[in-house]
Length: 425
Image 1: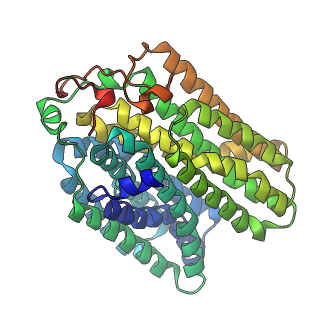
Image 2: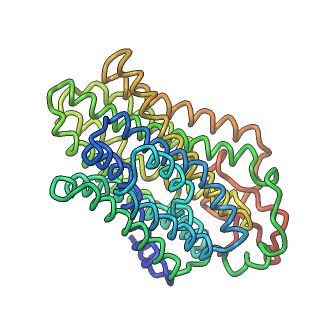
Image 3: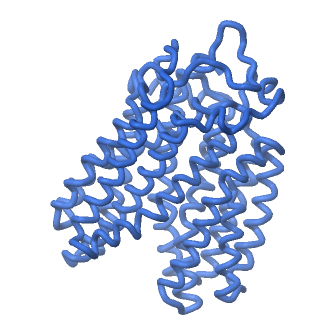
């Protein structure tokens, strides 16, 4: 816990994580809010609601790198204020829009979604030292798990007592408040020794988007696909058993164990390779298909839950260390896009596996997706040049996929005697 106290003692870290949690909770609930509005207020099918959510998700996936690139070039507040204004207009008008227009504007809202997650990750990389970063990203992953546990559940609860239009307004207000709060806080996205280097020039994409970065993004896609598939497999298993009302309990157990796993992992003295964590996550997911009722399913998802937050945190940590400061926004945007695409594809792919076999096939498909992404990430990292050794324990322990050579990127100016992999930011 000492590591977490050190992270929270960093000036500005506690308000950043708090505001980020508020905004991310609302953003994780936006799909459910739109679903409830289309089904209950417009009296349309779940397929119609799914199309709106798909349009929103596609916009988020495409907009992530673009917004990140704008942050790199124009600054944080400019992008945040623009996206906050876009979200304000969208959510205020949702209850007034016919379905066809809602479908198009949902895509536009996704393109201009407030980039809370990527901004938080950039700020963590800038505000922490190499020794603090893993614990900080563990806290960020725990916050993400809490947002997924709370956001959709609150929307469903509120939809039962107030109109879906009011729920949509509430989600929009929370997103706008979170984005405005981060803009007011204006956290640094570059460490003090990175500012001059970032201003000196923007490195070309081929200098940083190499095999190692592609490996990490692939694993980010894979873990998102696995988690999306597990949610669907849980519902399908309990529906077959006539216990679908217990799905919320199983998902809650999954989330609580993920939070516990993230806290334990962040306190460990040494990290583990991303490909190994993801591979283990895939392996422990497959046997969950043997459970056929909710008590056994609660027990079966504990292993996967304990590995979820650690896997997500190592991916964020790897992206921050593999990226030069001048393009960190674009890189974290790509990470968010990879995750959004994985979540979007996980449900249909696992759904087809369930339809072709049984609910247990859903867990198998989700686990295999994680294993395949882990293997792909490992093989891609093996193709890149070996990284030079670093004094950072983090870099030493993340071989072979995540270690970063201390050679400075074009456009950066590390202090004399300090390579990128060992800089104390």
